[in-house]
Image 1 (cartoon, one colour):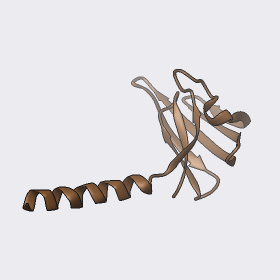
Image 2: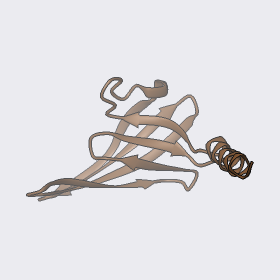
Image 3: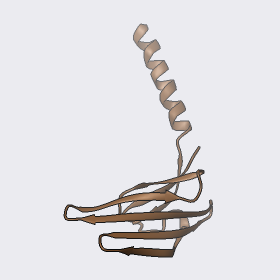
Image 4: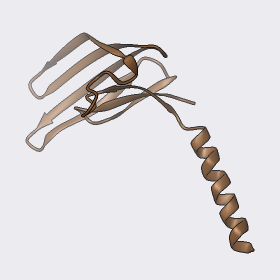
Length: 106
């Protein structure tokens, strides 16, 4: 009985976490879909860099809205590492240099 009660609580907490998950609205570099997830279009609007650094900014237009994100790439002898910037706190970017996603915060 005690096990069933604990299992019910764990399941309820798990379901509530799923219900409040952030929503993926765009994806860049998907291995199967490319950049077409959700019918979004990506337009590079800015680029700068030099040496081992590159920064690109994208305007992303989707049916769910428009998003502006930046991708900063640092190149070293070990490979590339990326960090991301978003124009609003309402969404954020996660992923790697060649495949990243934009999520709406719930």
